[in-house]
Length: 300
Image (cartoon, rainbow, N blue to C red; front, side, top):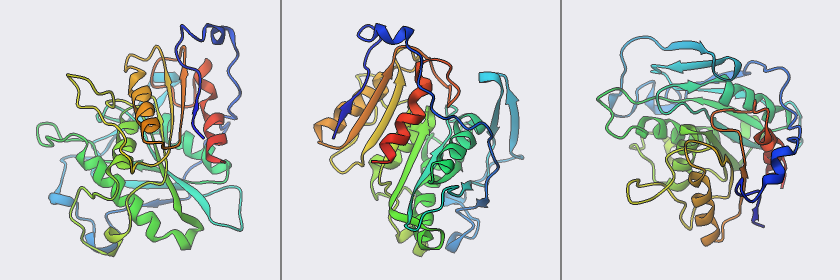
């Protein structure tokens, strides 16, 4: 069932005075249960496609954004930070790979990563925060390619290990924020078209996500000046959330949703009158409700 939630601020002026629903934000963000290095497992043995390398150490900085955000850059070793489900289940559970945003310049590691993983873990899902590679200045002409390779390798690796951790291999999704939303959409719309040469048995396992969640995604809107990115008939179901006053236009989400509808793919879109961009789960206004809405969508 496709639901079209609140649309434009002009049509939803009543929301301006409405109090956002409590999305049960995590009061304590815990550390990951395990770190997984997707390129160090199996036949790649720590190598990266195309012998990709970056000079210098990884860099971390706490910025003032949204009251303090840990950012990472200069990433040479992609990592999946795994948050196991806190609610135990006798049957295999869904899993979600989380892609923090940052314009393919940095990763907003806690704001759009570990805080979200902690929340999903408490709901009973497997959650992994992907520390993906960022483009090297003047070298990576396709800016998103290293990140997409990391995402696809991660999805295949996790599916290959599903039985060992109680993951349902047919319920492995991906979500992302801003540029991470673009990355998640790339993975969702690429199907099993792998963007690096397969080298081992892990790479023979499907890299197509079974669903995706795009939170204020960037770079999806298609017009005469932008190539955009839209789902095709084989794309998975999607949950989308965006603010109408986002400088990165809400049409990144609404156009993607319209394409889902045209292909009769299950989708859910929430457009809020305020909130701007880059708030993760910390928005004090109406978009603060998106986590609980996502929780309801995942439970269907």
